[in-house]
Amino acid sequence: MGIIDVVVFFGFIALVMVVGLWKSKSAHSEEGGAADYFLAGRGLKWWLIGISLIAANISAEQFVGMSGSAAGSLGLAIASYEWMAAVTLVVVAFCFLPSFLKTGIYTIPQFLEHRYNPLARSLMAFATMLILIGVSLAGVIYAGALPMCELFAQYNINISLTACCWLMGFFAAVYVAVGGLKACAWADLIQGSALVLGGAVITYFAFRALGLADVASLTPGVGETGVIPAIANIPDGGVARFFALNKDKLHMVMRADNPDIPWTALVLGLWIPNFYYWGLNQYITQRLLGSASLAEGQKGIVLAAALKLVIPFVIVFPGLIAFNLYTKDMVASAGNSPKIQLSNQTALAEMGKSGSTTILVADSYWMTNPAHAEVAPKVVAHNAAVEALLQVKNAGKKEGDKGYLKPEKQMLVGIQNDSALGHLIKNLLKPGSGLLGFVLAALLGAIVSSLAAVLNAASTIFTMDIYAKYINKEAQQKNLVTVGRICIGVFVVIGCVLAPELNNPRFGGIFKFIQEFQGYVSTGILAAFIYGFINRTGAGVTGVVALLLNPICYEVLRRFTTLAFLDRMAICLVVVLTVMTVVGKIYRLPKPVEFHSNTHLDLTSSKGAKWAGIGVIITTAILYVIFF
Image (cartoon, rainbow, N blue to C red; front, side, top):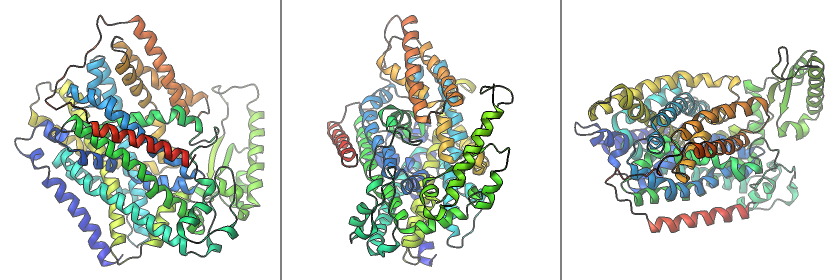
């Protein structure tokens, strides 16, 4: 790295720390109370809220995972996570936020006590704490540390995964513990702006490189239909080449049997994690609860929704271009990965020995690339032999019986899709200009913003829903802030200890790890809120039923079906809401629950935000039509 890059990188980190702490002076003064510390004094303006929402959301999962999924078989379809979120945010602004601000809550679990009973609040707080610390916090640290280690290694800066986890955890914990939500919001303003600008820089250079490249060196993008564009017909110019090379990958709807984003998930399944994440997830909604007024909150949410429409163009599109330009480099990256040591013929022969119960799952590149013409048939033959062996050994038995054998899956990776971002940075951003330092700092900032958001949310829930509710009901404001700061220190240590363990292949990848575990709680929480908003007469037990029934239903479907996790969540939502409706008919309140006002905030809705939100929804629909 050039000296200018180093100066820019560390200068960016210093700027984030100084501005965040300077703007949050009241949160760590003697007069600062719980509202100042946990909710920024309920004084956040719309532009802070909007940028902070994006900064808290966008992390390595998007920059690395989403661009990698685009480079793989999913193509533009992965953008559904962003574009559907835009619509979700608009709904949250006008359907969820008014009730949240009216009741004056600090945390989302508090709302369940208003609608149902204290037990429902406690159950949600406990489940949310487990997810935030054991899943979200550890997952964000690991997902951020891994690509940062790999990127820095390309520039001869070698940091271990464990050390990188602790460095990022310490960086985030310092300004969150001292400055609270206001420090997060102002740091997010810088880091969120930088990550969008950094993504735009990469996108510009990617299109430029695509236009200048020798046509013979380009690799056409092959999507779900397997249509391969003819290289001879590829036009000049980066934009024209992009659409010609990736025609088969620039569509949003996948087959119903797609294991990642089947079209059925667009109907219901994908809406569930979206509404839970953007409307009920504490580390996102904490920014909304800190709004200076309902209008400020609504305008901030709509700003975030508009930015979500832009994100695929600066993350997904570069991932597609990375495949066109650097396929050979991405293959080489896979060849050096310890995950795919079985991706050679010698190891494949070992796998085929009698008695093996391992199914080899080969990605599309393995099965279609001419370079693997000899290996692909062996993969198919091996899997057939394993299935025949299992049928013999499991004869007369059913799943769950003693001695029943289940196949183990080993992924064969022909191309390391998640290396797309790294190759773009390495090949397009030359050291010495400062751009490399800026982009690396923006990526680090995106990761740390998400980490800081999780820490702040987890400390708030423990302090307000557990400590103040059960441990010390007479706690003073200063005492609550102190407990929150101690929590941040304890939680970051737990997260940094757990994070490196996620590198173990038994977790099946960070995305799968996060989604699988969140499914145990997110659908039940969403069902409780949907029912609670629509039906005000069902007794408090209905909310408790939702929170307890969902993990049972989800585990049954996970254990006894092969459904994708999004489809499992959809089924759970229908089942839980149905049971809640029946229970609500049996156990009814004498009069409907009213959400009484408990705030001094101005609760006048924003007409401008409403029209802008309608514009976001219409734009989203147009994008789906264009790329259907």
